[in-house]
Length: 73
Image (cartoon, rainbow, N blue to C red; front, top):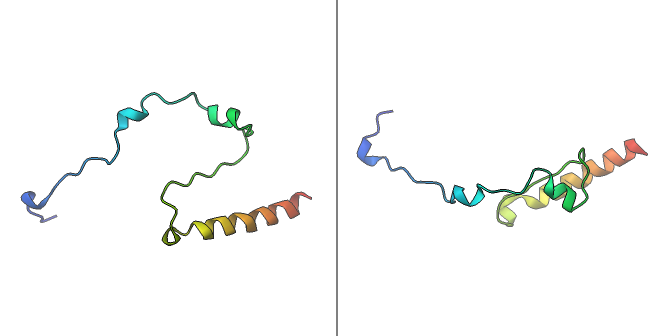
C-alpha cells in the first residue's frame, strides 16, 4: 500500500494464548450456574466506563425483556 517496510511494526497480541489452552469442558458454566441450554447469555468484555455505553446495553436489555415478557404472558 505504499508504506515503507521500516515504518511497519508488528505488535503481538496483548495476552498469552497458552493460558487458555486448557479450558473447562463446554457448558460447564451453564451447569455451574443452572442456566438452561436454550437460555441466552450475554458476555461483555471491557472495562466498565461511561464511554463504553454499558448503561445503554443494560437499559436496552430491560426494554427487550419487558417486551418479550408481555408476549409470553
